[in-house]
Amino acid sequence: MSKKWLDSDQEIDRIQNSNNYISVELGIITVDPTEIIGLSRKLEENDLIYLRNKIINMGWKDINPRGISLVLRPEGGYVVGSGGNHRAIISNELGIKEITAEVIAYIDKSKMTDEEKEHIRLEEEKISELNRSIRQYKGDEKRYRLIEEIAALEFALEEYKKGIYYRT
Image (tube, rainbow, N blue to C red; front, side, top):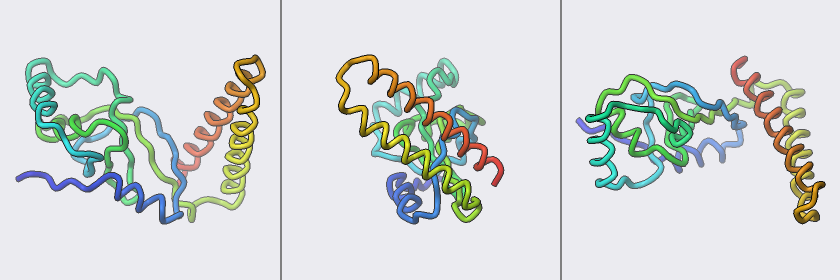
């Protein structure tokens, strides 16, 4: 029996439009492919045939786990974000037990403290302000320092959100 796949875009829009969650990048983690329940686009049959034959002949190799982008829904189950549709289908079809993928999840705002929400809001505001100010610099050292500062703030914010996610 063929698996019924959800539409990833509809699922992601539903979660984001509810305004009940904050996204968090979990990074590269191990996932059970049977828990992938949504695809983000129409599949190319030739790509499926090629990938299926390659895996049958050479085995499953997670050469580029960032190429499989998954979103973990708050109620469970993953949907494909921006890449990995064919690998999701084939790993299910061939009974692959685990794969590695880049995963984004959601934190339920109702499980966060007001202080945590405020900290995230302030950090996002700071990042936005730096992004706006960067436009005035064209290729000089100040621009590159701002880019580095933004990257450091974004990394720290994601680490902060991960701490909340794993606590809740």
